[in-house]
Length: 293
Image 1 (cartoon, helix red, strand yellow):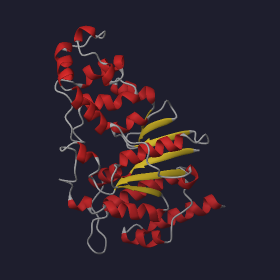
Image 2 (tube, one colour):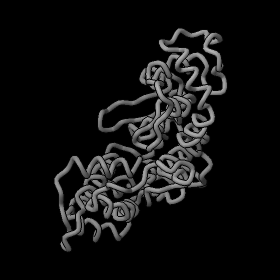
Image 3 (cartoon, rainbow, N blue to C red):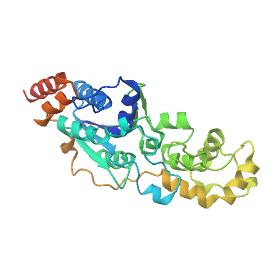
Image 4 (cartoon, rainbow, N blue to C red):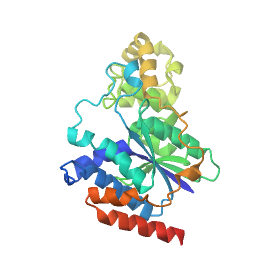
């Protein structure tokens, strides 16, 4: 079997800015939720059998206590923000396993689910469905891969190295040095993507990078400047790496068998009516019946 793990927050943002606005009978915006539900239903119709969705039930997480500039919900459009809980309700009604994150982030949920699913010998591949570079650290060979559904790009360990210049296990170190504007931490001054990739391709992790640039056995432009910056702010880089490191110990399910889709719940009928998408219920019901026969 294959297991598909979906970044619900990313999908909600993507559909909010990609599909026309739509409201329910009470004037509440539902267009992005309708788009995500239709997309997940399409995956099921393409013979996906086991799947789970991680969402950010709230934007803030434990990382906000570790770094004051870490991302918050500030600036999110109200018409989008109000659809967060509705998305969780809709996917549960569809019969999909949903993990709403509060203390942790959706990325941590995906990382934990990927590790747990890949530990089951019955699982052939785990697909982490998001283009988010943070999740590249979870890729393992060709067994756990990252899948950008919108672009149709699948990235295994070789693909991660081809894109970032480093192996998946070095991604947190990479982000610590170059920074992550989306998550709200700046990285170290002067450390760009190219120089970081060259250094980490040789040393792997922050601890292995020598302080004196004369001990570097890789040629990097501006090595003295980069080494000086790292030596002066190594503790800060380690802190940034901690922010970038996804947690994989969350206990989200006991068995991958619980991720098997078996059909929509009765509440999905009313949910589809609210989304003004009655065809979704018919499609889900027909698909469930065909799998049961």
